[in-house]
Length: 250
View 1 (tube, rainbow, N blue to C red):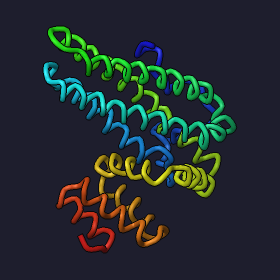
View 2 (cartoon, rainbow, N blue to C red; view 1 turned 135 degrees about the vertical axis):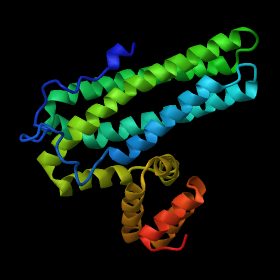
View 3 (tube, rainbow, N blue to C red; view 1 turned 180 degrees about the vertical axis):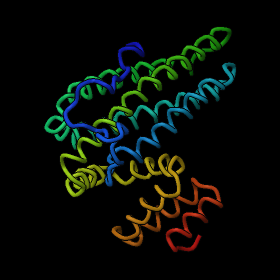
């Protein structure tokens, strides 16, 4: 699959107007957003993995294995994310945003296949020694960078076309129900891995909203565990800023 195959056209016909009729600007950000936080984490991991692939030492097997392992985790993240969307969000898209429903499905299939090919290439790179290691590592970098570009187009469609349309059609209570269904389907270990990617990629307002909701609704021991995770993925100043917002000890 080429990058062109997965480039998303966000100007095509869709169900529901997602711009303000008076200004032509994008409609207001939905009060409940199914995509914002996890997509920030995914973007950060795509960028980080691409950067590592570009800067690895081709002659260092440890470096090559490290990048292959990171790509393996990226594959799991993207597969899991697509499955959650297909199960919990796609039915609402087909009902309320039918103009892009088929494109979402096709993108998921194409992107899933392409990241699988990149994973296979990373295994080859990990086992490639000698003069050809540099060429193989560069090819992996180019493929991952191109995939990242394609994936960014896909999630832009979801964020700026699908989400506003769903919010307008369903309202915040129903959208929150979809969000809770997704959260409820994620095993604790997978949730911890996702939070470890999402929290550093979020701004302080996002973090306050996320952690504040957990503090209000989750058992105290669950919040304590997440707060411990926060301390392991954020620097001291960011932890202090978040603690001040939440009214908890840093």
